[in-house]
Image (tube, rainbow, N blue to C red; front, side):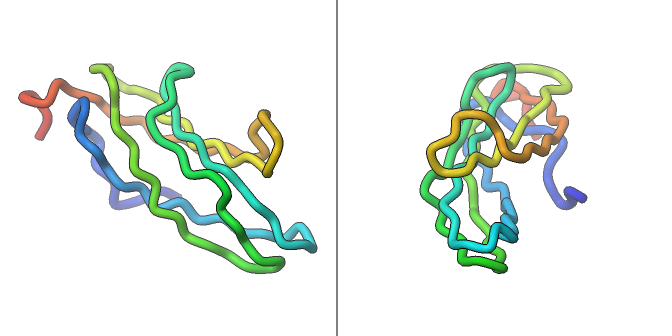
Length: 102
């Protein structure tokens, strides 16, 4: 369960999110993580190598690009070479103009 993240972010301001990846694929795997809102990419990390039966935490920088209330920020995990998400999670965040964000 997600915890400790702000419910409000300023547009154009960078924010770091910790993403955990568990690999139970019985082989070393390379993953990509893409964060997006309404189909617009706001952050990514590619070529994240995770050993078999291991876990890795990745710091992903996201930067909101436009103001939006109750934005669904999707975090998609991709297996190397795939374009369709293997797994996904999301957070609901208000994205405010810089001068209006807390």
